[in-house]
Image 1: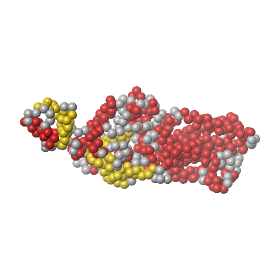
Image 2: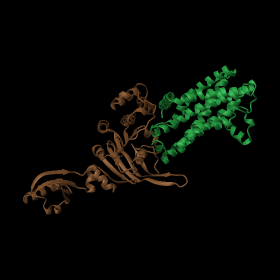
Image 3: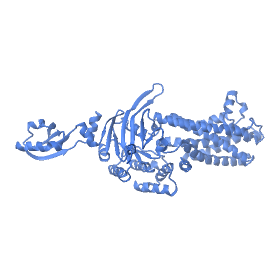
Image 4: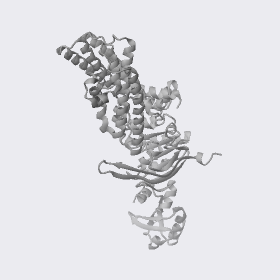
Length: 317
Length: 264
């Protein structure tokens, strides 16, 4: 049976980072103020938060690109500062604004990083070919990086990030600026990485639908602190936004509806009465029964769970 | 890290730098234009001033050394500069490699380019001015060229350290640092003509000793005893110090966030 430590990919405790800028009048920016987060192996975890929340800083510390001021972070059982060199062999990163040596061609970029990670000869060629195939870059393999579109650059970044077959992959805004069809494919590929290879993935994103679709757990960061973390369903429940039950009634909604047990608020618009309830599954049968008993005809019913975006707005407030 | 992984990482940098160099329009100017202009103009000046053959050889050796050091140190600086220009620095430092792989890999390419320049300028100096650079023999030429390459490595690694310490602002060091060597290492004149504080600095530059040793083959009395041993010893010490400085500045860039800033 694996030890608890072996089942944790990331164990970050009270990680803090402050940036200093300016020479004469140094300005301090507290990017992280004690972030604690555990990520189980094989999970996809999303870091969500407004611009400047500290998501990229946190990701960069975990990826050994930044050294934290305080706190500790163990990734794949290794300390991100002490064991940085050994750890780099086992992780990789792709960011949403990728940039590589501009005059190198697509295949040369992937091969360069492949060599840095210890691939050579036939093994390197096979790895480069496989990644180029996987990301549909074959027609561009001899095209210089500077001549690629944003979407193609992003695909090169993703190919590069998998060159060492990492156990842990950091994706910083992986679908930023991509066409919708490419975004869908990238998301499907991210899900497949976990499904087929058991890869642990930590991603930052601004797209709540992306987080909801991909992530087992999400953590909301704001002003360098994690405000809340859990599965999307847990967060929605904890925030207490409730489910929206939309009813098309005839005659109009009775006055008692707004005060019925479990109903948080009600509003009518365009012939629909929208009631926010604490738990639709629990309250809907009672509401329908009561409406029926009072002779109100229910012509249509729609139930909608709150979106992660609403949780984000609520937390970011 | 295994020796195989070490070799592969160095080879990765060699291939990368060679590919970038082959596609760099400035490559032509760095490799041919400026060095040829330097030797031709200095050679013509020695004719105009009516210098003796020995005096002309003194100056031309310095000119050739300067070109070799300049091109080789630029290539070493490219280990970091090219990634700074492309904003891809973080990917390089995310990979499991040490700074030695970067500096050795780019130095290897620098030595190939420096060697090509040395051969070209030696040929040009012989054809245009009758100066036989290779006359002292293979061993003496090899030591002299090695001295140039070692000086270039040290300067290049220090430039890398300055860039990772100060960011893009330090880019100017890549182009100007070699001029300090020009003034102090006795490229065009013996170190003895320098005022004492400057001469003291000159005595701390390895190239000074390699120039002194090589010029001795052309009939000039050596200014230093055991110049080759002194030059090699200084070089080894400076190579270590430069790499420590580079390592420290990379670690600092990881602490300050400059590593990420230079990738945005």
